Structure formats: structure tokens, C-alpha cells
Length: 222
Image (tube, rainbow, N blue to C red; front, side, top):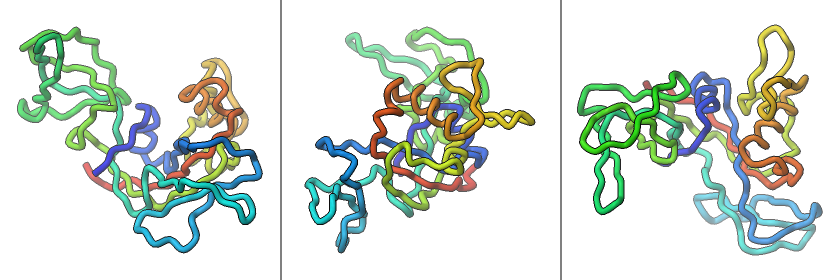
């Protein structure tokens, strides 16, 4: 089973069922103007759908395969804490995970913040581990991919922005500004634009990339 990386607060939103969509940038091989569209390849003969850039009757190679496909199960990779120790060999460090061996459950940054521990050899402690290195056994959330589409980033609708899990302030009819703590937005779409920039860079919203829109649902797993 493959993993899909999410920020801690977005992983929590997905875990609670408040986030049901995620967008990932399509890595295009060439630059295309706005007359070109990324559409499913006609007459698919493969199990994994592919997309191609088209402009009228013209098309451009290569074709593009989404990172994830409908019908696939994924586990969410998030920043977590594991109980174990470090080993140093010729200047290279590696972490030995002993969480389950000691009868512990994994812990998650989205739920608690533990003191940062320095790497020391041979001493078992709780260590903060990057989402990139999360194994399936440490995951608390499994999702089922319902569909994968391609669209321009700025084509996102208000409903889709809510489905991305942006935070709505209670009784305030406003959404979180992820770039500036003191700000807020009256629309979920505005909030999502700030979320996207906080992750991908200040100019990323205006660049309006093609993105994979992955719709999913959480599977009861715990």
C-alpha cells in the first residue's frame, strides 16, 4: 500500500472526515498556454488511466499518469513520534523503531507536541519522525480513492475548497488565513489559496498549475 503525505493539521482533518479532497501539481514536461487542456486519453487500453495535453485536434506527448488512481487504498503519512533509538555507523545515522516492541502506540504531532530530543546512540526515547519516513504500521488513517481528475488550480470551487479541509471559525462565517495568523477570509476558496501558498510558495497560486484532484473517503481502520 502506498502512502500519501499530508501536513499534520490536514492529516487530522482527513482523519476526522473533514477533508475529502487533495490537490497535487502535475509535473508537465513542457510549457503549454491556456488553449491546451489536460484530458483523459481516448480509447484507454491500460488499467491505469492516462491523460494528455490537447488543443483541438492537436495533442502532445508524453501522456501523464496520476500519482494515485481511483479504487486505490492509501495510508496518510504525517509527522509522528516513534519510540526507539539511534545507531551511528561511519558517520551515518539510522533510527531503530521499537514502538511496538515496547508495547507503545505511535503518537502524532497533530494531537500533541513532545519535547525535541537530540540523537544519542543506544537510548530509547520518543523521537519526532518526518512524515516522509512514516511506515504503514505507524499510520492511523487509511483512505480510499474515489476519483482522480485534472484541472487548473484556480478552477477550484467553493465546495471543493471546503472539501480540502480549510478551517472555518465557529460562529464567525470566516475561514483561516494560512499566510497571516491575524487574517481571515470570507470564502473557503480564499482560505485555500492561502493554504496552497503556505505550502508551495508565494507565487504558486498565480502560477495556476495543472493539478491532480484526488477525491477520497476515510476507511475505518483503528
